[in-house]
Length: 366
Ligand SMILES: Nc1ncnc2c1ncn2[C@@H]1O[C@H](COP(=O)(O)OP(=O)(O)O)[C@@H](O)[C@H]1O
Ligand SMILES: [Mg+2]
Image (cartoon, rainbow, N blue to C red; front, side, top):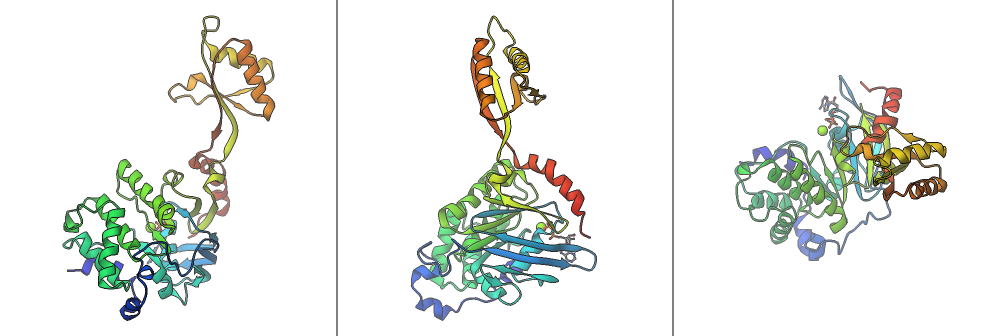
């Protein structure tokens, strides 16, 4: 009956000793979150890889990838086949690397896989849930596989299912669940044993835009509410902008970029200016454009095609004085200044510009 869950079961290869659990205070069993963590991840490198490679007979899935990831929510982004799932399996100690080394929470993936899997929760990419049991039965079972005693397993299951928003439906068989509900069950089983870190492989796959937003919100709260660091993969760069503190981009098994989300989305030197029209200047935008030109400030091409784009002037700020020039020009023309703001990059814009070039330079591993 549980056969389809085997992929998940296999991960709990070293159930913690039930006898030992019964000797431990309940906090250690994860009943109270955040009170006792044997290893805090506040000031350590959560994931470190050094020249990590994985070669399959026909393809190099990871190619000398070196990486340091700290606490928080980290996005691992790359197109299908980029090597994301391969990376996660190596980090869990389930698949040996061909070359290089990696540590998770300071533990070596080559020799300490079992200890890693005790401390790390894993939400696999593909559907691997048994259809004929309820979410409660399945998650309790996974908690037991992780070594939680029966009572703690039931309590943690109820807490976790409530957290992922599945409380009402928890006694219904999983086979009747929507994709979004199944993704939540997979998330719940990754969290139930109170890990220090979770690997979430494409958790938004198959979800509609609302489901995606809900899932991303849940993921963010795993860190903000419980202090559990997250490595989340996606083939969609844009959706990680809001959720992640740090983004790692891989392509063809090679590292393209690793930086904090704020570095990606830092403010640009571009100012957006919007003004009102008046009787004297029925086209205020145009009047400002001409006056700025006369003062030596050039206006960039506007974002044609966007609603209202014709009314927004984009110009390059050359320091503080540009703000003063705009203010003076608008005041001299007797127009109202609706807004003058610095634009921010969207993560995807950064890629279309810089990283396309880098991608060309590094080529694709094969
Ligand atoms: N077990 C395997 N045997 C052979 N090739 C594999 C295996 N697993 C993954 N690959 C290949 O490695 C590459 C990376 O795959 P994967 O890590 O699943 O990418 P992603 O998760 O980013 O979509 C792909 O070309 C894939 O076909
Ligand atoms: Mg994958």
